[in-house]
Structures are given as structure tokens and as C-alpha cells.
Image (cartoon, rainbow, N blue to C red; front, side, top):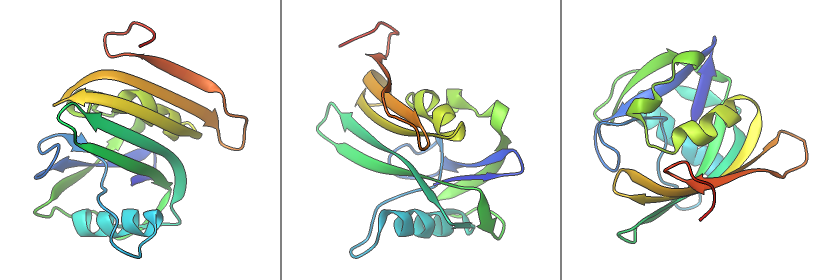
Length: 162
């Protein structure tokens, strides 16, 4: 769940589980009978005690790891929230100016799609990882309400294709 407020983005330093120690946005798994948006809000409340209001769908990301593990994530953005972010055993939250997002402390894919979402695009991405190392990626985006077709595909080494 991406929460934006006063020119800043809410991020967390993840304390446990996949990506522990990395900077990320709050989020987690869907529980039985729950919508993706409801799960994103619930996970944000559980992780940082802040409640996003009226989240908007902004994309879908698929992650495949070479060990066979895979994750599909829905991306939501909220420009309104209730409460203040608090530290929990799961996460240490912090607000960062939009022009100072610490991509160097985040998963290697984040710099490819997050700026597009923050600029109003809807994204679709597929990423292949070996542990923390991104091996390949494909990201497609379209401006909200506009035609799809903007596309970027490449390898983690910056070469296009495959």
C-alpha cells in the first residue's frame, strides 16, 4: 500500500520475513474472503497503525524467484489516511520526500515501477530474482485512463530483451 501525504511517501523498514532489513511499502497477504484493497488496508494498519482511506488500484506485479517461490502483488495508492504511523514488531515506518526515495535500500525492481505509479500510471510488471539479485524484468505502464502500450522490457544489466 502506497500512502502519499504532503509530498511524502510512507515507507517501512521491514523487520521480519521476506525482505527483512529492506525498505518497502506496507503490505502482505490476503485472508480468506478479503478483497485485495481490504487486505492492503488491513496489512497497513497491522504493520504501522495508520489507516489508508479510499485506496486506488495502480497495478499488478509478479515476482518469480529461482528457488521456485513466487508472489503476485496488487499495488494500491492512497492520498488520504487516518492516524499516525507507529513502529511495530513488523516494521519501522518513516515518511520520505518523493524526490528522496531510498531506492538503494529497496528491492531492485522498485525504481522501475514506483516512479510510474507516483506519476499517475497503472503498471504491470514481471520480475525474476535470484535471492536479492534481479535477473530480468518487464514493466508495462499506461497513464491513468489512457491507452496501454507504454512498455519497457530488459535485463537487470541494462541490456534490452530476454
